[in-house]
Image: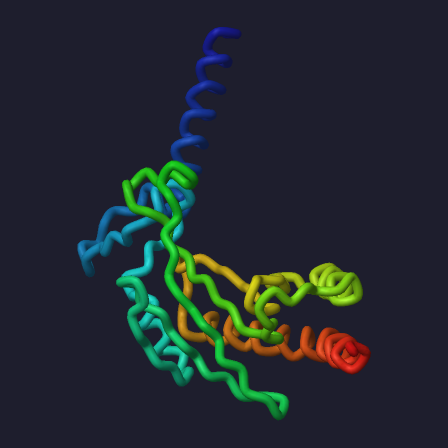
Length: 203
């Protein structure tokens, strides 16, 4: 009798399990393919799964609606982008840079591309030395800048900004270029009065 009771309970458990499986809604894994439509595979970055952009930088630049000109320097395309806001105009220079595959290896064999932008804050005369006061102002700016930096070169003081080409679109590029413009105005406000005062003090 006891063995029959055990068998009956086992049979009842199997029946309940079968009903549960039949009543369970199908998930994405066990739904049959309806056959409607065709799956389109998107080419992905082999390391991080990001979509590899199919547009060139100039095509994205056109999508942004920004005014620009283009010329070749040393067989490289250099873009001059005009930005006007806050009562001032900034000429932002942008060019495409290639990252070495040894620095940033990619599984699909491609080389990571980035965009480098810069704009002049103040020109410097040949052999002009930058005073400690100006260097301190630049350091203070860089402490506050998040996605750009201010630097000194032999021919001037510049705002620099870089960003990756993968994932870039017209709206994001518009933001990056205007960020260079606003950081330039911020740097000029901090640095130009110091340079002007130093010129006045010179004999």
